[in-house]
Image 1 (cartoon, rainbow, N blue to C red):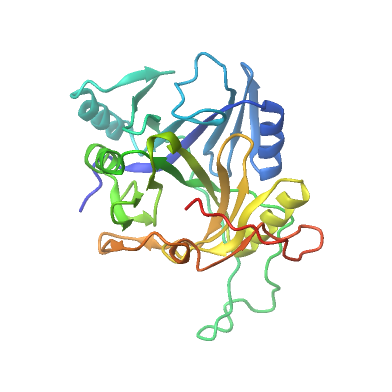
Image 2 (cartoon, rainbow, N blue to C red):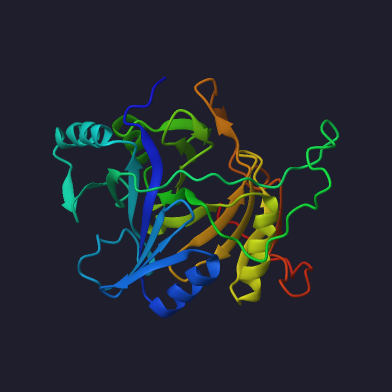
Length: 318
């Protein structure tokens, strides 16, 4: 098993936004760095340079929507080199499926989402999370208190999740045309895909739905450790934004999570400690159940002021 095109990961997420004031306030609070404001759009970056671009929903230069209201309008996938980008472009252009967006080769996936490609602009960063003292290694952290975070500072966009009207066609496109790899699956109902053989559990998760409900589920931001998941979630609650569910833990990817409603569309997630996979990994099949979505999770979240659980709000979206 080899990488076909040497993807780095997600390089940019572009939203078409109905309420730009709320959208900008949200991502300021979320912990992204505001880089520029131009042409009525606002560009943010994570620690490693992954971009989040907010643009007014009625801006004519935006790619067409694949659902109504505020949502993602384009996902830019980054490749490791110009050679990789050229190889991908040749493969896709042979089928006549490419167009140009601001100098980036682009196409539309079977779910109606615009995706484009560029040599990655992300930076390699060196960050360390908090060491955890376990029974097997009780002295991993010595004479040091574990970390506390006043707020989160996301490192990257780790993955995106979409409801799709034709799982088979969309899964086949990403695997056979782009070389993505299956990590795990809900047979006939969901596919966890990673964009390279060796890396985090998934960069793209597809969930079967009907035509009326296709669209964005969430965009997930990697943070350093579970303590930053907590610190970020508590801070975002104090800012007045609504938690859907979190904190919690996904049993399939092992990741800890905190999901928040996003005025720019769908949800956003702080997550950490996902499984790291190699060519030796064999995809597993799971039933699409609430137990397989979350080993545990706090519906409605934790109050950022009292630090106590809020009234339970159960979500059945996944």
